[in-house]
Image (tube, rainbow, N blue to C red):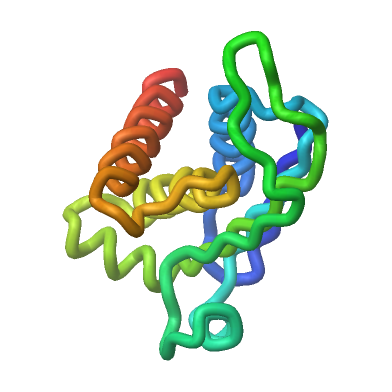
Length: 150
């Protein structure tokens, strides 16, 4: 499993932690071990440009996901085909603001957003209340089990 992490944001962080989380989530979701994932941390200017260009919404956002091969989760004993999962783009500045409001660290928020972004790449969304409940419960479970194993 290839998880590439690039930090272009200027925010000092442990890129290895993002790669480990990415590998953990993909493994837990039964994604083929030869699948590629990219995680990119950017500043607010870049995130604003991406948010306007791809979502037609003003200002920066916390996380964007750009799927490539539209892979979906596998099942026990049946992994997805290998491929390019896509890109998760994070904005540490926006994440930091949200973290302060939620009462936890920026790193915790970034790891939550990374998990959220990967689930979007795997086809999850939160447009409907039932879908939101399922996705948010799954991201919480994945993140908590990842952190418990660290």
